Each structure stands twice: as structure tokens, then as C-alpha cells.
Length: 317
Image (cartoon, rainbow, N blue to C red):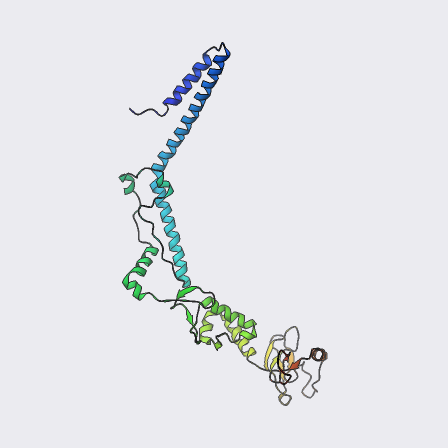
């Protein structure tokens, strides 16, 4: 016959009641009864802890399989979401490691073997996206039909060759769409990067344009024309300075009106319009620039007319 788990607690309670009713005549009796009372109180505390432990063990045995199945389902769903994000971004998906059937979760390790009735109520295994991709990758047919992978020359991310952008440079480099777009955006603000190049070879526009928004496409085309013009004409209004096209010689001087501020600029001297028969002269701004040029020894490039500073070499231009 199994022992009642509350038997020892009941015995300790009855003994404590008897001790309270006994008369204590000597100091020796009082000391003995005090020690015995401490032992009974400790026994009661032990039995209370034992009942709590048994209750927890019963709950683990009853709920362990359900908790383990829920944790496994959450882990599988997170792996599927991560793989879906990698596939959408064109990145390589790492091969996942499957837990063996003998692997037990912390909840199941506390309980005894799950009864057959509890096992029959567990949810059935459904092939997940991760398992299907692993099967495709590991199978002979999947190994021969899966696309090869390349690395982006800028960020180094691995991506499928079908989603990578190959540029016609001597080394045949590949770009991801984000890095190629960022390169084009930086080229709009940095003349030295226009046109975007790889190993000194310009990247064709048909590879760049699809990665830009309509507004970026329009600005890129405008900046490409501006940076490709040697002698540029800008709006003479300092607060505007819109690019107006190429400057002209004095023999072909004309008035060019700005489409933003409606100011007119002389195409030859690049000053505000001063009439068809007005003489081109240097304004106050041009005189300040000339003073700075003489002070620092700058010169104007004979082709684009921009000020340049000698870095190395002789003074011949």
C-alpha cells in the first residue's frame, strides 16, 4: 500500500499539539521539548516543499508534450521567415541543422516518458519551407538545377547569379541592386564618380536605370549632361545657380533665361544679362575671384575655364 504523502505532516501536527499540552517542570524537559519542536516544524516545512515538488512534476508530465510541440513549431516558423527574407533579398540561405528525434527539450527532460495516449494527440508533422528547400538543395536534381552564387563586389553579400548584376569590367564583377543604386546616387553629388565605373569601365545605363526611382532617373540624366559639359553655364543669380547648358564664345553670345528663377544670364561672360550691345565686363564678384587667383597662384583650365591649383609638375597647361 502506497504511503499517504500527507501522513508525515499529520504526525508532526499531532505531536506539536501534544507538546503544547504537556506540563514542563524542569529545565532539561524544556530544552528537550524545544529541540523536538524545532524538528517537528522542520518536518512540516519539508513535507510542504515535497507536496509542491510533486505538484510541479505532475504538471510537467501532463503539459510537457504540448509545450515541447509549441516550442518546436515556433522555432520552425522563425526559420521559415528567415529563409523567406533571404530568398526575397537574393541572399544565400544557410543549410539548417535538424534536431535528432532523441533531442529533448528542458520541459520534457523533467518528466517521465510520454504515454502513448499523449503522443497520439501531438500535432502531425507538416513539411515546412525550410525542409523543402533543404530537400531540393541536397537532392541530385536540386544540386544540378540550383543557380550558382556570387558575391557583391561592394558589400560582399552572397546572392544568386540570376539576381546579381554583372558589369562589363575586365574582372566581370557582380553587384547587388542596393549597392549599384547607391553608387549611382553618390555619382549625382560627386563629379569624380560620374559616370559610375567599375575598374575604369563605365557601367551601362541600362543596368543602372531600372534600379532608380523616376525622380532619381531624371536627376541622374540631368547630372550626367551637366558633368559631361566642359565649359558650363550656370544661372547668374547666386541663390539659384541652376545649370543652363554650355557657355558660348563672345561671337555667339546670347541671353539664356533660367527656368527656375526667370533670371537672364549672358552665355559668353556668364554675368547677368546686360543687353545685346552691352560690353562684357567683370563684376565685383569676378574681381574678388581674380584677386584670390593671383594671391594663391591659381590658373584657369583652357578647356573648361575652371580654376585649378598646381599639384605636381611644371606650370605649363
